[in-house]
Image (cartoon, rainbow, N blue to C red; front, side, top):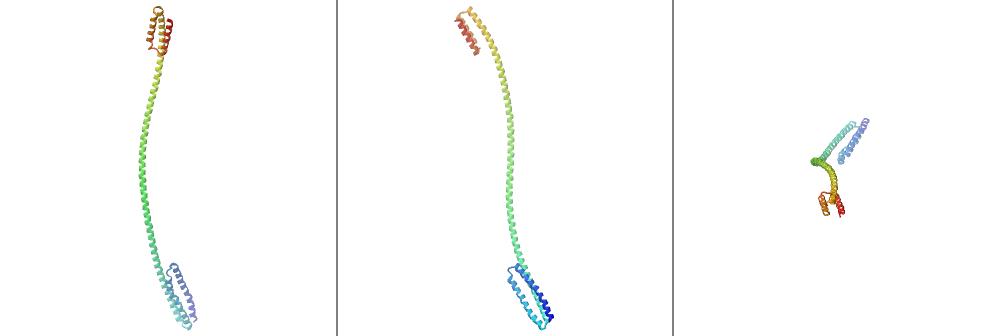
Length: 266
């Protein structure tokens, strides 16, 4: 009897870890799966009812059947372990199926999200690449046009510069020739004025000499041989013949000579 009680006492603490293990797995499943509480309770009901059979086992031990009680306890423990293993396997399978379903759904969602993201990104990259390529083509065409225009303007500028340089050279040459002609003209005018001045001075001197001799001759002729009327005619003829060849100053001198002669004669 004592040995049977000792065996029962020894075997009863061994049942607690199994219950704790079962409770731990049940709590873990409650944390991971919120919708399986009713099924877990339904699975736990036969496990909770089985330990009630231990009471008659203790009574049998007290009545004197230690071998039968030990075998019954052992069979109960085996059944309990088998039930626990079955429940654990069922829970494990259910958990695996739920995990697979969840993973499958999440994978499908991720694939769908990834496909949407990839398609949107590809679409955006295509649009951006098209816009960039069109902008680059426009920029290249505009740059090429600008280069062509710049080259044309450079050629025109060079041509205009060359024409201006040639025109400036021609103008410089013309100005040089005009300056030379002007200097030559001024020199010729100065030489001509000098020659005219010298000629006039000589002519004036000769005319004065001739006028002086003529006055003397006229006076002598008038006093000795000629009458008054003839003298006046001679003076007039001399004045008329010498008038076109005389300058204004000389004409004034001839006028004074005429007056003096008239005053002397009349």
